[in-house]
Length: 181
Length: 132
Image 1 (spheres, rainbow over the protein chains, first blue to last red):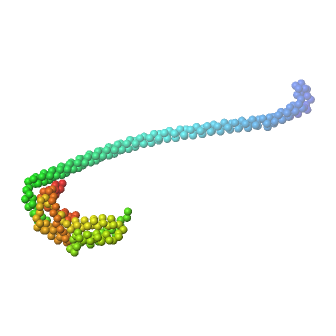
Image 2: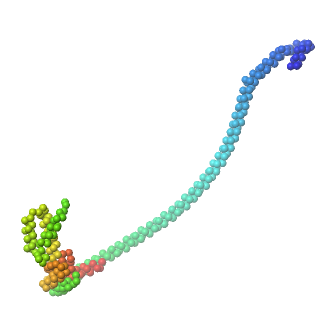
Image 3: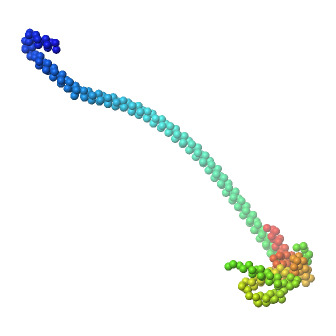
């Protein structure tokens, strides 16, 4: 500005200014215009653009941070998943082992039960056979007794004379008459 | 149908009236009882007569010793049996002879529901029963 003032007041410089087209008023006006334009640009263009750029930069930073956190969480989830899978495999193996043992116990128990039932059936069959045998013997005894009585009755009826029968009857009557009851 | 409780009581009284002084049921006394029943009006004469008959039969059975034997039996033996059971039961018991060839030999005496068996057939049967 001092140069411009100096050039404006110095006559030698007047020729210099006319030679190169240097017009202080014009330069001042241009400078003023420039300032106004610069201000306007700053106020309505650069500032919003800068704000937008900052905002975008922030968003990018946030996005990157979020991505980083997600990556961390994903890794953590993967780790947990692997751990759970491992634990599930261990539990499954445990269940399988227990099931095998229970199955084995059940088989043994059922085998013993079946053996006991078979023994009971055999014992009952033996008892039934023995009862049947006893009944048969009893029936045979009864039949033999019946035959003996029938035969004896027939023989005595035929072999005893009327006199012997009468004599026996008299003795029996005396026996009844003399007996206590 | 409701049973009339008075009929059995009446029938028992009629049986008592049918006995003589010695407590024996006689035909004459039974005739008197029947004649008396004819003169009296009763609500259920048929039921009364049936009950009287049943009780009478029972009383006659109690007063009779049926002596079964395959052949014959002397009158003395019958008298002894009659005396024996009269003393035993405390009431007059008359002996009645009945022929039963199935007894083979010996006697069987029945007084009411009591049976006294001294026959050969009875002994054989008891032997057979003891074998079981």
